[in-house]
Length: 204
Ligand code: ZN
Image (cartoon, rainbow, N blue to C red; front, side, top):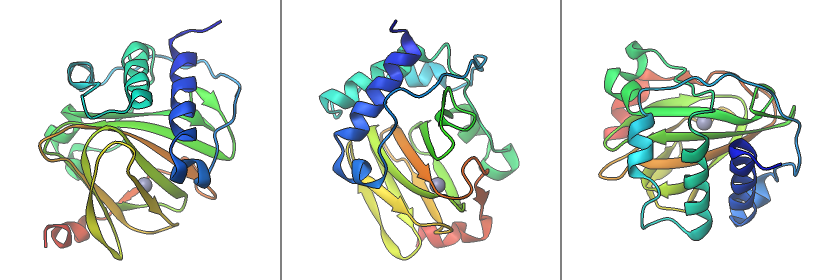
């Protein structure tokens, strides 16, 4: 039976399969077991439903954005960070959830898929974690920053790959962004460590 979360998982998997860099990084399982999780809202939900999908999205991106919105009132949304680390405006206009993973809506012990939303003009500060990761823009736009390379503007389908402990950051400008992040390796589910001392470097 197809429900909103099952449709979201299928749409996410289809989007990942259709994005060559993501598909090469790590495939997502076809029929993972479900975990019953409570719905937890975040303040950003009305922004998310108001902004997506945009005209920028691919057909698969639109399907995934619609699926996120359709399942939004069942998702266990997370904020993770404190106001001290990221600021009140960030917490009001951002949210993410573990779609697949050890504690996701769908379960896997060796691959995690997160979906995150950031409103316009936000800075996800420099942070790092042990798990290897790839980000892909589903809809909207952002700037991907990673230690050792130039910041790059990303639109739907563009990716950013992070090796273990490679510091990275994400900024939005005049567009919000809906992004998928897939992680594998050690440290799945570890909370990323924010690196406040790297903040100024990102502005140069
Ligand atoms: Zn990361």
